[in-house]
Length: 371
Image 1: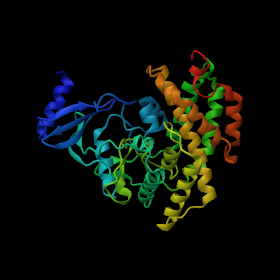
Image 2: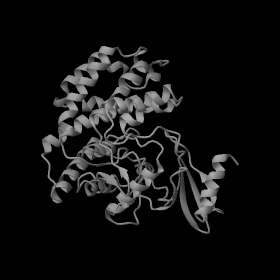
Image 3: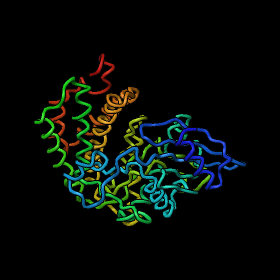
Image 4: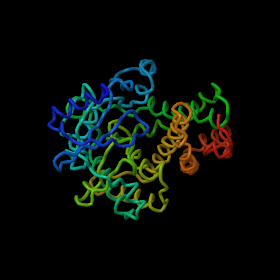
């Protein structure tokens, strides 16, 4: 066995699972890996996250300059390879009656956790096989409202600060559009003037959004990270995974992640129904919002997220040799084109129309060889 496999075996032995039959699961876009474990009729999941695989998020109080020196994870407030943050976030969610995996054992120093196996009912698969969209999405929306019934905590149990999803992080994410998508789509680097104008437009748009109350933000809340658990009741039917990059941010971000899903089409009629459901749930629990203000915030955060994702998928292709992510770009740009039509985003739309014309938006491979 390799050194890492030996370390996993030692961890499982110490947790009483040394004789488990192990079955690795396919990887994704991260450095994290999962292995299914089964022993004596019991099932669990092993999280394997090498702790040195990614640079860590910075501590609160670091300046923008310090964060840029530390690298992208620090700028964007990503958790990096931190199993302890996963454990803390799972505890936070479970304490609110939500179905995050129970953690049976963890070795945060070496990057292993033995967690509850929530099964194979990924929303994406259940929906593909004819699952009830309104039931699945409605439960996911109700779970968000449950989380948003309170403000964002400062610290997750017991010692992990919940970083603010601030303007530095949000603008750094939109920089992925100019840094990675533009060279792939246009065959040239963005100019300094284009980058500066893009950043300034985003800062202006984000300022009023960031003035709104902060809540816990999952940050990757969509059909590939939700598991349908019909045997449970209420909001617990929506199993949550991949939440270690959670931050304190806007109330619209996770809703947008859900209804403008980069990996599957979501009917605009369903998206509108879920938006109304969320607004109604927030009103019912004593946290009403001005609908026009919230919808403008949604448009800004939808555009921000989709601009980021377009950049990430181009980076996964160009830097990491994963061209399959380019196939998602037409859907992402479909969302982004629609987001940019909101009146609040007029100046930003003008920038995109001038710098990234519609004919180069989407999958570069469909137009020939990308850069």
